[in-house]
Length: 333
Image 1 (cartoon, rainbow, N blue to C red):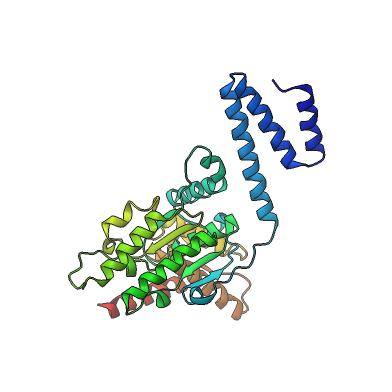
Image 2 (cartoon, rainbow, N blue to C red):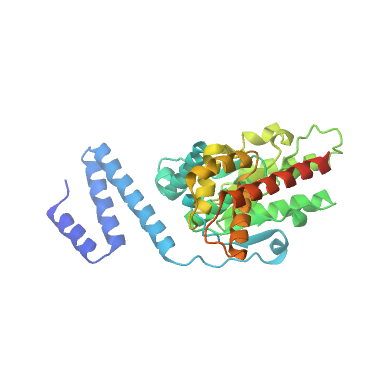
């Protein structure tokens, strides 16, 4: 049991906001309990101290501005950096995706607690799904929620006609993950992760992929790696087991479309009942396209000096977007 002196010292350190002394005394009490044979209580006290330290560290990080980090030298051509303020409450996605994002955030926020049990938080994520359905926004949410910079890998700078150079540049990016904690986004990842069995592969791209697999598996940094692709089928099967989680995105269903529209037009007068036909017109569009269609209708309302947003304006915007999508698909054929 804690001595009277330890209890008084514990309370005094709390009153004086001396965190380090408070934790030190608490750990002394835990050590004394362990020596007395109360190993379970000792471990519980130690875990509580670790959790308190982790929360205090996160609180300080949130209260202080994010230090501005800019890639220098050759990294400046390989990484672009931003500091998103996006929050998970800004996202409208299916529950399974939101649940995985929350799980990752929770593990990252308590990584010190996990570390004491020789466990590691999720930090290698494969984001799969059609364009405009939330993959890039997921990386922004992770950065915004954790107060970390978002580093987007610039594929135009990474991919070289000399594959040896590409491998060296990949090494630089993974070295940066160790030096600067952040969210590292490999967008259009299929340009690197393409299956090694493609018949038009002359062997060089295989070496790039093999190097990426090695770097990914060896990486022990505290950074989060997000690899996003629109084409899951083209990815090499060896990639999947290297990632902690795979998040599968899809086009929004009626429920999500209605939620997106209501969120986007909430500042403007419109009857919810009249949105049902609009929702049907939006089926097949991505999250990004639904948002753009709402914005088009709002801009049209403002420019025409209307007092409220009509379902007809929204319907026109969605039909226009659907028409552009059909034309785009026909051009690709």
